[in-house]
Length: 305
Image (cartoon, rainbow, N blue to C red; front, top):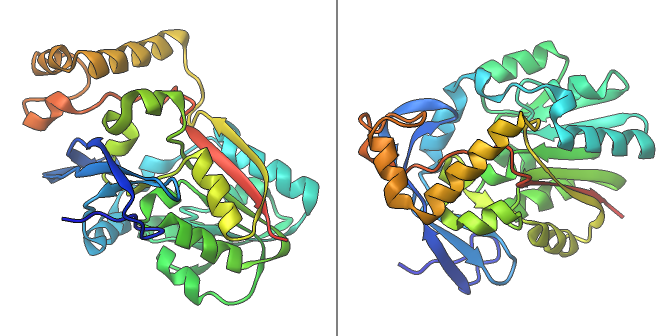
């Protein structure tokens, strides 16, 4: 089957390797494994992507009913939120913010009452919580953004672009809904991170089945240029607070073992070592360890001229 980039349509793509199948979706165990497919790189727009992908209808059904406990954060520990908040306060001070995939409205609550919050969210429980927080919901799916009218002082999407097949198209729609002089902010995994370059398709972030596309600093620059956006700032960060040194060392050692001695890693998993029960799913012998302490995410803030 011919594989083409889902964003730019170019056939100059390279298979980076197979992605492990997964038994989890949004932290919840599935009755059947979701196939992983392969990780591909586009040589033109720099997008990395999964192919093939699960049907969107199946993914949407899972998003609607998954537990909202999976995505609860301490705002002060979210570097992407902190950086974007700082930028908005310094440039604008107040205004309207449309949050794509706003979840339960926690980012809007973090911004404070000087900002009018709008959102798009698919999860039913999260939507209800967002409304309680005063968010005006404009849709329940990222595809609804193309039908949103009007312009906003800022349009943001944190941990969302990896969930769509064509993140460049979503960025373009975000830019179209941003007023001139306004802000567009995105945050996602970063394939330019050293940990990702080391692990390739065996990286834990790829294995998460709801992740369809994988950005990078290179992609952020090229996508911004494509839509005429001015890149104001871009920084790497760790998605979670850095934990105790022992935990950092443990994740590093686990990933090095998995990368260079996969047979030993699989044997240890089969023997009951680690946090995955390989007796439940044979594929878990080869399921990658997490690396949440790595600086493997990137946040990019743009200004619309």
